[in-house]
Length: 572
Image (cartoon, rainbow, N blue to C red; front, side, top):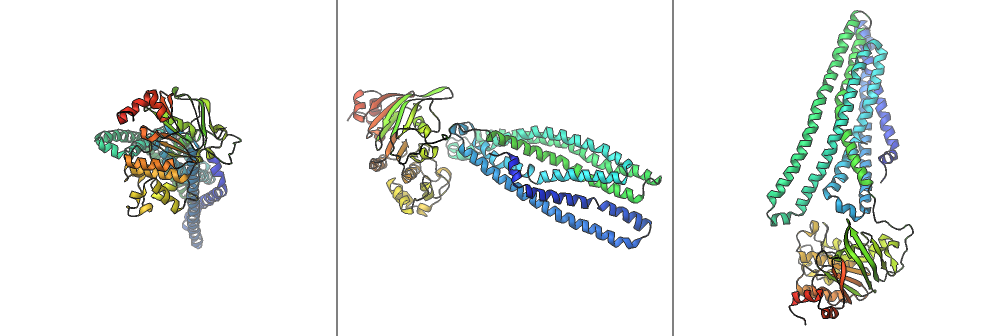
């Protein structure tokens, strides 16, 4: 992800046009008090009424110039800020897509969403959009006003010049305090988003366990904390904004008092005092606005720090510099003395097996024995601590991640379906070249056509997030159809028929057995899922405790035999 300055530089010419409009508008605006001075001194004081139409036209012209430049600069900054925000959001999302699973294992969904939405919106508005435009205008406008004041009367200008540093110092203190508060506010916003997101995603579980009150209390605690931090923010603003208001009120009053004495002593004209008071009035809006501007810039800065933290995350798993490309992936898989640790805990220990292309490997074991971790390493979501994993005799670390993962189709135990049509969910693994006929065929093979055809829109029926509205078995069948549509050389099934009835499971197993050219890795808790595999390995505490065919493992009378007896009651 690029630095923010690089995004800004891309639109430098648009920013320059906007800044030029600010300069033109500021210069024009600061000419108005001089015209007012001439009206007071020349028209009213000296009775030269012939000058009045020209002076009034000049004031009107200044108004038109200000209107024109205001529109261009605000439109340019707003549009450019949104464009920069969109590019930053896309690049951040792209960066997140490249990160390894270890990042997602420790990051909350709500936190990631807050970075992608709230924080980037704050930067687009406060860092590169409207607020930064306002800050530039305040700086140029104030500088121009002070210059014009000194041109009118250096002596009278001493008073506002002494007052302004107080306002600037207050703004600096305010920005520093707001930065800390916004940092906390951003963090708590992410935490509250996470709580809400998890509750909504798991609403069925919440209701099934009657935990609505617990979830409500949890959300109330985070909401209360967010409220308290917001109150801290309000306290800071309430403490400093009245001081800004006091300073802005003192400026014209002080100018009238000091300037009035100077008019009486004939040091300056009445018109000069009138113009000076207008200039003092010109300083009011920057002083009144500087607190809000500091507020928004502090918010943008806090958000930018959060984005930098995410952008500094590096993927643990990367492509090799010169990846090997396999012209044809046959699908043979080999684990050679593979060991894997996660958070200093042994997950897999010295795992070895050879699975020829087109053959089937069954994996069984108790929950937590490391079955799914074998697939995690095969996909190279994590790297091994020792040993090698080979695809068609090539170390998977030497292959491109794209080719490796495109060579494997997966049906996971935690089925995820997107909020889209059934046909688009089936096409997800291989969208290009997946015809409507192939989608229908895959649904038939997964025995999903039985219920899909009964839906009002058939395959074009839109299903909810995570497949809401479908039963567990229906989700699994669509997931199996998606894997079949990918037509990869390797098919891995992680407890993929656990929600199916026995009859449907047997029908799907027959379909899978007919995929003679596909290498299959089947993880299951049911003997029926793996009994026809060419080899079965049984894991215990991350190591292979038993291996062999179905009959060989029954003859061992070990863990596999115990599982068989528990499920069938006796040996057939």
